[in-house]
Image 1: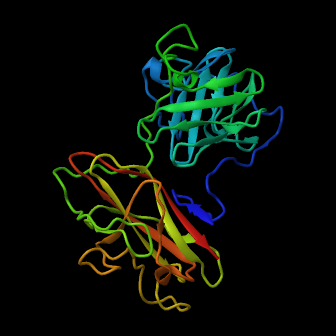
Image 2: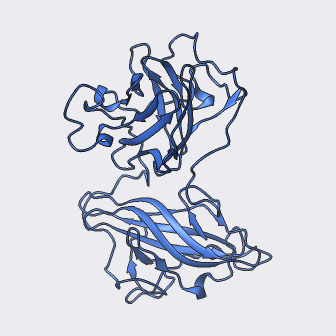
Length: 355
């Protein structure tokens, strides 16, 4: 069983790719209103430059996701879980991205829809426009190939394609069209993209100065090896995850996905328990607390606060069965080490477990 734990506590979910769509046909309308500059509950975080705020479709042309003082622009906020507000299809009207923050306000009682963000920039779900209907942000094309729209967790650039049954493909970045396509005109070959200030991963400013807390450890790989020492002052702790396995599950491996520039480092420790509060005296669950365990590092016993798996992006580390066997609940602790201004970015932590 795989579980990705970027703010998602569901053992059956690897990536969110859809949602339940409920609506009443004929009752949804976004026309007949004044242009709205500030949508309640929406803090626009789309770039303001023309080349950084537009998507393109061959039939209806430019789709504006940005916001400025000009009537008719979009009003869009990217969050860790969804897109809020609406864009403006210049030849077709507003494209609502969330029923709760449409140009008409909250219309979720009539039609429940939104565009979802899985926390790593992978979008899914639906938007609505009165003239062309539903716009899909993730799915499978008629030839069987997958399509979708993604946001770079580091640059904030959108890329990929959305689909509408009336007008066809919507491109969110000129790079979709191949090498050299961003340097010529007219559209759709002009330089364009949608860009946001949203980013995935920890939102923490790196400390100033040089190295602050890692001593290189072993080569890593599995079963209690691969340890390093990390500074305790730069860490993040996840929420508690429930495997829902009565009698406890076996935690097998841990892996992270993200970026680790230069000489930066990422360390991970895992804590597990049969008590949801991390107590050690199951079933009473009244004493003890979460104990975060890593491998043994040189000169440091396994389980010490400064021992952690020196994680490599995309590489699985096998956890010691003696530490995490027959445990129902778990959480993880991620250590971040910066050097000379470079910052590691953790987008996903993936835990493999079995009943």
